[in-house]
Length: 118
Image 1: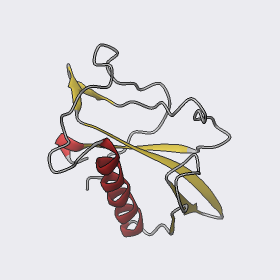
Image 2: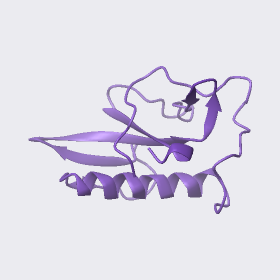
Image 3: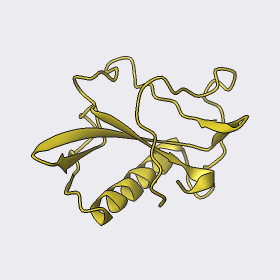
């Protein structure tokens, strides 16, 4: 996996697509399976760069992975995209209505651009 990750708020998928873009699902039954694969790739890459990786048990945490970052633990939400528009890619950074992403429950977003393997 490449080293390029985007971090921050404000990136979003094309509003005209309404979440129906199915590109990048080859080999996966659904977006959940693809997301699990991307999380595994992120964890492997983080370990390769010397980070200690923590994975919350179950689906109840508002983040996907935690990393030892110096003397503290940071919470990372991992996302992926294959939706290209113009000269870039869009990624949906919205959670479910019961648990919105806030600075109180997620420290970083890590994004994987599937067609670029980055």
